[in-house]
Length: 152
Image 1 (tube, helix red, strand yellow):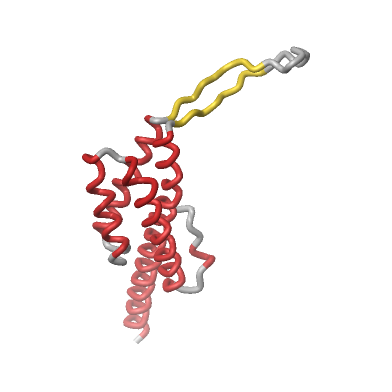
Image 2 (cartoon, one colour; image 1 turned 60 degrees about the vertical axis):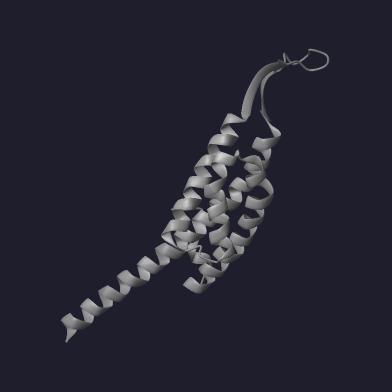
């Protein structure tokens, strides 16, 4: 199950409306945080995704594939730009014995990309929710048709 709760919507149109709203946020994230921070060789997929979002083609399989690729690229770049440093931190008076602390440091680029990642993940979840709802509707329609044929 994705992070998207289908029970919060009365119909598939409501799910699709949320997906389109999320796509607008993603377009901003792609323009502001992603494209300026990717090397030129990694920009075409993000640019194609942005073009599909701007053309309102978010439910096409091609767009979903582009989205998955951009999420993978950004996730990898955020991990590459993140370093965890462990150290010992003693209190001022050395009364409590201190503690080991872990600090996560990110490059500015990784920070920018990390800011866009939740938006892209939310869009992916919304698109999957629409596809899941459509598959469910289709399956129920087939079941009803089979039931009606057997009842007559």
